[in-house]
View 1: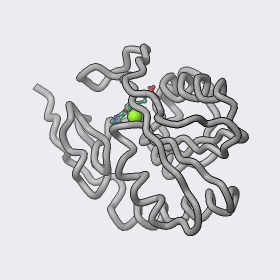
View 2: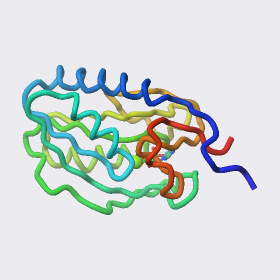
View 3: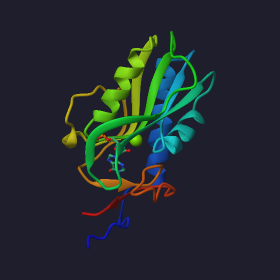
Length: 174
Ligand code: IMP
Ligand code: MG
């Protein structure tokens, strides 16, 4: 049996906090007025809550939920919309807030359905990116950290719904 408990801190809580603050300022600089953040549940909820606390001025939020992984650590390639937005995106400056981009299939799907709703701008912020795993070339304007192909948990990310509460990013498995 492989050991699937977190065994190595990859990114410390301090490193995350510093980078999230930089990203928040960068996004705010690009969209000083209207800004509408769409967070992807459940993984992005902690990233979103830290991001918005570093933003001055007006910012509105909405949530979507999709499922791309079943229970394990490999992708099925299939994306399902589990919860849709509450409000329209028409004419808004929208930034999708994601926890991690792996194959890119989830994000590509989200960008396509959200773009069809007529936002003024549509960009993406992700905390983590694993470029070596990419199956499609998806555009990401704001990336927190680029990481190797390892399965990570913490700061909102889970393995079988556990470890979202860790304040840092840790590796599970090999
Ligand atoms: P993608 O569609 O392959 O890019 O997968 C994106 C989704 O898979 C993310 O939003 C996560 O929910 C999940 N995921 C991918 N890699 C990891 C990981 O290392 N840890 C936890 N979840 C992950
Ligand atoms: Mg996710």
